[in-house]
Image (cartoon, rainbow over all chains, first blue to last red; front, side, top):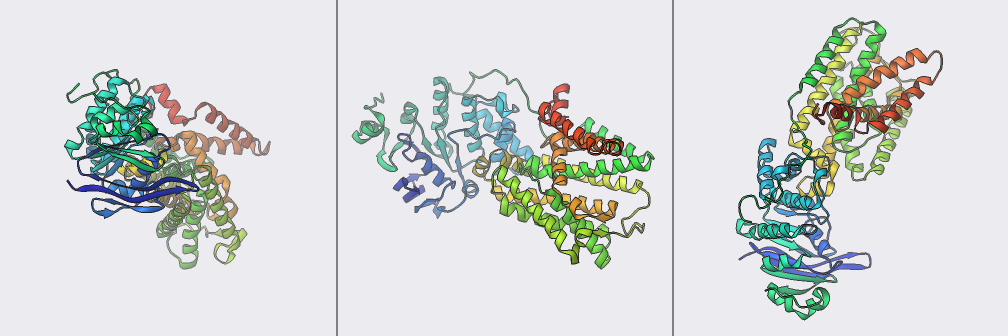
Length: 242
Length: 339
């Protein structure tokens, strides 16, 4: 497998706060990598750096063999990195399908074909009944699905999911977990920040643990669940993955 | 739960259905257009024709403002500057070089579009109230410039276009050609707006208005979209300014580039319905005749009373019809915004 994303010695400082400290890792094409860690560990900062919403203080990000460290958000999106937002950011005055069309325009320039693509993606995440609904009528669980649909509508090579399970019912978590788990087989590499651990531990091929801006563990879920440093910093007790 | 629809549990249909946008005209819109043509063809008195000219022109200008303010969320209180730049450009080109206003109008539009793009590049990164204040300030700079660059603009005395009627001069003895000129302007700006709504560029405008972070994550370049929206809006406003100069035949900098005029564009659009094509048209059709009639009936007996009534009505509209005439009509007819 070839590395689709390489992060080399990435640091990000906000004033006196070192949000990320010399973080390095790489993600292979077709992987599903989970990222966990306590609040304030630097997960969102890491996402904002990869997605171009922030510029790093030091370090380099390489995507598909080229340095993308200082590209802006829209340029990052155009080269095939999609993201969701932890707090959904829908276009409030547009309908559900129009929300998805805006990302679909990256693949389909005509309004009609972008709409068809958006409708297809919406049916994949189970929002078929809400295609023409104003986005204001959606509950938080549906808004999370809309975030996922918007990210996938641009047919990305790499997608960054940010806590897409928060606020979902157990049934919704189960179906969404399966849906995300199937993405690598469709050629979409996934990095996934999540607090709903049983979902991510079962699905991810590898887990990275962030704490205080540093990667304290990086390995298969079974090893992570027993790692003493992870248990101390985040899990509280050993996880039984059976 | 395998299968193509993994979320079968959610089957309840959402209660509200948002209508599709599109480039096609509704019966309501066609009806309004036919009524406009009919009104233009009726031989009203000079005073009434004056109101018709202004109603059409302000409707077109409110629509032009709406492209930036309503669709792209770039609320501008400085559009009078673009109006003034358009008016001065065509007039100066005519007075100095003898260039026909039929060409000068386009020059005015292009120059205004350039200034609009420049303003967006510098100021569109400011959020909310700070952008609004920057537009207000930019228009003041333009007004003071027009007042002081006397060798070009005539300074406080302004400029006069000789009232020599002729098609090449775009000056007419009767008001009827002006009525049709302004109607053509209104129809053209309306067509641009409808075309925008039906294209992906229209959606780009909505996206930077509603959530700029989500828009950039979707691959939309916010600065480029805002610059284009402002340039288009300013350019159309400049064309309107040139047409106004040809109608009024006198350029007074304190009126042309006044905050009052900027507010008027914004208010007509807001009263009608921001971010809708028909809204600013309805706004002008309601407000312009009312304010002109109030002025002529009350102006002589109680100076200023027409402004009090006008302002009170605006407050009532904004309190009880926050989404404008279009929102109110939509609720009554049950058709949402799809009038």
